[in-house]
Image 1 (cartoon, rainbow, N blue to C red):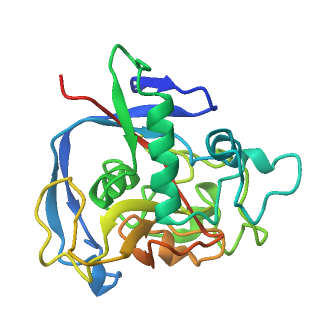
Image 2 (cartoon, rainbow, N blue to C red; image 1 turned 45 degrees about the horizontal axis):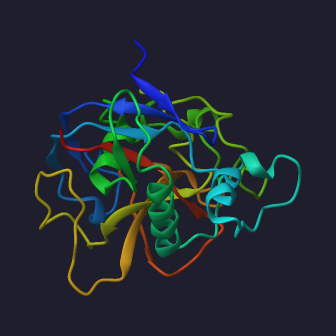
Length: 247
């Protein structure tokens, strides 16, 4: 069944994610301590998430510049933007919100933002409790994402691999995706809310999904990574969430 969706002016499509609950963390038992304890998260508010990663063309249209390392070639505009810090991503989103503040999608106004870590894992799992949406063996990963074993040593044009169960592309690999949250070493103090974790004084942010230069294990649905919010990497980009305004 297709999900309600809308398109933007930059080639993106955004799919509705409806409220539900799920178990967050490594329930299989092959992960790291930072993926524990497994805990219930309640997604209490609907949101829309990008079917694909933010592309270099989208970024360039908003920021009038392209920071990406892999920006050569006629297909570069359709590759994910990379070498953007968390701070850069927030600036991009702020400008995008200014440009689109009066735009109505499906009869609603709203705002753009990064996904929270809980929202990201909920979407990556897409109703599954296995390592990846397709199961616990990485033998099928090549069908779903770009990683060190198949990327050709660079990011790739978005949307070439199979979507997950909810229609989301490139959730595993290509570039890792910034989340809104401050990084914590485990989930011992995390509650059940879908909201982002905020830690006073922290400048270290979560990114999820693994990238074109990481091994398959880092692309698992529960795998977590961290980077200082001012740092840039050619393996980190972003995916947008659009949240309807409260009525």
